[in-house]
Amino acid sequence: MRKKPRFTSRGQFFLLQFFTPEGSERRAGVLVSKKVALRATERNRIRRAALSYIAKTFSKLASGNFLFVANPRAKDVSSEELASDIKKLIDTL
Image (tube, rainbow, N blue to C red):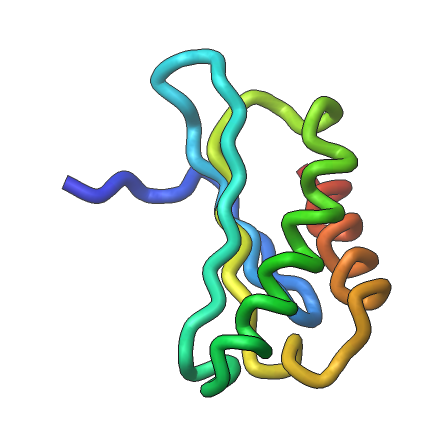
């Protein structure tokens, strides 16, 4: 059975879904579908940029499961803009 997110927030380039954990661990994932970018290299660029920023701020995150879902606008922006959007989403928690 799928769990519903405890918190959902939409940014300019990502949708953040926060799930409550069963344990006290912290996890984060980035989902970039083929609807966002057809080429794997573009999807990987978005994923790597997002994970790079998340890794820098990982210890400051609350305990829980974070899922960042990219939208098609994420394809045409720089890594700094993606990081800025993720920062805004994390600050809404």
